[in-house]
Structure formats: structure tokens, C-alpha cells
Length: 582
Image 1: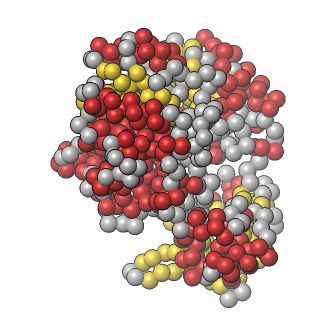
Image 2 (image 1 turned 90 degrees about the horizontal axis):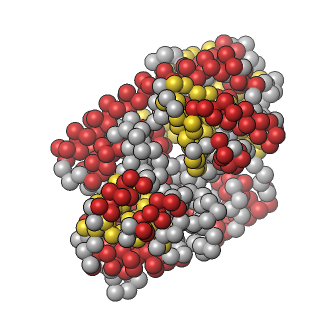
Image 3 (image 1 turned 120 degrees about the horizontal axis):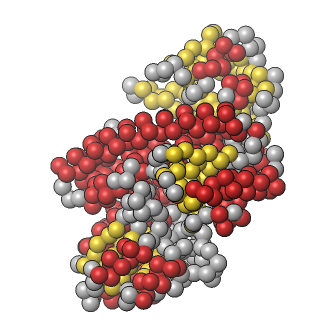
């Protein structure tokens, strides 16, 4: 398969001028320009992110109403219910607001839905239960923007609702007392891409100001908000929102807060993942902490995650962290089985040639299919819809690729669904079994009409075309200023051509899945690793000259820093060896 690599556009003259004025390398300035940061002030804000660059929470439409209503509820000793979601973003949001409300003496409780029996979003039965329990105010986190019927019911039962959400709103907003969502029409908040926990943090900040005589919050609230950044970083990274603007600030300072956190649950999680005492990175949350917290929700035990984040007991936190580890291993076992089943269906149905893949399985675990859908979408590079059937109904999850708006495709087929929600790259829905085949045909038909072949061609977008010999340890150290990395702020990707293989490549890892190879270009001699690339080792044996796409890394061992590269693709005579192997 042809290697499709593109290099982000840059401007050498502007790059040199920006480098001079910022006192940075041309490489760093070129990357900033390629990512749309073209002026000195914008570059300084990006490179030296500060907490005082966070936006005023009262820029949110309805923030004054929301914080005022909560202040009234606290003062009048009204019962408050926080209604959230079962994923890491939702749980972090609940834990943040619950801790704050308890700190100010509120009579507060929370509800985190059971993914398997309740599903996502607000449910009428739970609203009625809240009214029966004497609740007067419901605060939603990471949900609520699509719950018009449930919030109407809450109004009828004498309860006010404050919505905090970050999902796309529908045509008509729910009749809530206040709505905090940067994506709603008329909201002047300057950043639309907050995670649910980011919106919850802004509400917490607004509440703190409401309790303070001036906009400058008291030391107690300030310390709370600084500590809460650990939860904000956790939910923000876990929800894969763009790590730009405020999200970048949240994660940069939140990682430091997480490392220093006194929260027993967070400390137990760091201990159980072997991260205590480490320099925390965003990928530690993405691949080690969040999956364990999400495992609780996926396996129908979200209460474990909430118990972990809200307990004041170190002993209890350690026990819960151990149980989460067990649940995560169970999730991995189920995931492998469903993945194999799905791959078998892909082969049987010839789905590799379809623009959109729709698969279903009786008895598939509804909490796990999202991970499998993500893996399949990445492997096949096309939207994947998986549906876990359970008798008369099924729960579906959809994952997409960069240029295909899966939420819009589902919207076109919404008459076949009981309900649905999501955004451009991920969505979920419920469906009646009798509508499954008609839905499959309609959705694949919509994809045939609106999804182009070009949008399904995988392409690596590199930041720089750089001779391998020009890569240096000081340059890579300087690139650390671009962290934290994540969605829309990935680790810098370089391309080097005219590279030779020195010696024989070899494989490593428990199952010998990974590739290690020594590369040479002019006077440069670097170790390169390619995770999951063991299949190309033999093809490199006789290769005289190759091109590589890679992320430069610093390997620190025993006090010594060495430069190496992590391969993303290898091309021989213009053809991708990695794509061919897949």
C-alpha cells in the first residue's frame, strides 16, 4: 500500500523570525507555525501556559443563575442531587462537585447510573425517586443536554435543575433552571471544547466566587480548586477532548496536582498502577489510570469508581483500587473475546470493503463494545458500529475516523432508533431488535452516499521533514515544551528519508510483537522501536534505503539520557511496510 504521509505547511522565514524572538530552535518554531500558532504572543501563551489564562467562569451563559441557585440551596439546607455519568469524565465531575458541596455544608448526594441496567443519561424513574427523597435541586454533570422530558418531569415534581454538560445540544434546550454548556446557542464562553469535568470545574469556581465577598476567592476555596485540578486532568484526558486552550492548562497543572494529591483514592490508583513518584504524563492517565476507572463503569460497577474518588480512608481506597484492577482484567478478557468475534464477522461479511461496518452480537457486553469499536475503526480505518443485542433490544456504540461525522450519519437514521447521542467521532444509541437489519441497510446506504473514498484513506500528518542526522538530544528536550500531548496536540511527528538499516532487525516483547532496529543516516546512529511492527522485520533485512515516520523520544536509564525514535510507519520504495503487514 502506498505510504501516505503529508507534511504540515510551514513558513521558513516566519519560522526563523519566531525562533529568534522566542529564543527557541527553528524546529520548535516550525512546529508551532504548522499547528496554527503564528504570532509571538500566541506562542508564548502556548509554551508557557499559566493558570491566570483560564477564562472567567461567568462568561458562561447562566453561570450567575446556576451559582446563585446552588448558593440558595446550600443556605436553605435543600437536598441536592448530582446526576452524572459512569465514565471517568462523569465520575471525576461528580467527585469534584460533591466534594465542594460537602465542604460548604450542603446536604448533597449523587447518582451515577448503572451502565448495563440504566444506560447513559437521565431516567424518569430516578427523577421520581429523587422527588420522593425530598430533593429540591438536581445538578447534572456530563449529561442532561438531551434530557428534555426528564427535566420537564423534574419541574413538574417541584425540583429545579442545573445542567452542566459539554455534548452537542439538540434543537430545543431542556427547560432547566440554568444550562452551562459552551456549545449552546447564545453562550459567549470563548472555548467550546471543555470536557464535562471542565464545565463542572467552572461551576465549582463560580460557586466559590458566590461564597466569597469579591471575585478573588478565599484561601480555602483557592486550595480546593487547585487540588481539584487533579480530577479535571483525569476527566479531560480520559474523554479525549482537544488538549488546546484551557484543556491544555488544566492538564498541565492537573498532572502536578495529581502527583501531589492527598486524595486517598487517587493515591491508591497511582500506587496500584506503579505511578507513584513518577513524572506523570497525559498518556499515564489515558492508558493506565482512566482504563481502570472506566472498567468500573463498563462492568456495571461505577459505584466502585465513585467510592474510590470520594473515600477518606486509605485502607478502603487500597481495597477498591485492588478490585478495580480485578475488574479491568475481567474487562480485558471479555474485550478479547468480542474483538475476535467481530473480526470473524468482518471476514464472513466482507466488511473490509464497506465504507461503514455494522456488526452485532447476541450477548456481547454493552460496556465493552466501545473499546472494540475503537480498535476496529483504527485497524480498518472506517467508521465501525457495534451493537450488543440482549433479547428485544440492543445497545450500540459507534466510533469513527477523522473525516467522517458519525453523529450526523446516525441522525439521518434516527427514526430507526429508540434514542441516540454523541459527537463527531463517537456516539451511542439504543435500538429494537426488529429494526436492526433495516437500520444496518439504511446506515450503510447513508455512508455510501455521503462518505468519500478519500476520507477512508489513512494518512500520517508529520510536523517536519528532517534529516535524521539533524535530530539531536537538545532539540528533543526542547520539544518537551509542547507537552501535554493529546487530541489536536499530538507528540511531534517527523519524517526522515534516505535512512539505512544497520545490522539485523529483531523483535521483542512478551509475544515478540514489537520491532527494534538500528538506523543510520550520515553520522547519525539511532535505535528505533516499532510497537506492533514485528511483522515487517523480515522485509527490512535486505532493504538498502528506507523512509521513516517517527516520534523522537528521550530514553532515561540509570541517570543517562539517550535519543531514540518510536516508529509510526516505514516506507520502502514509496510503499508502506506497516500498512501491508496489517
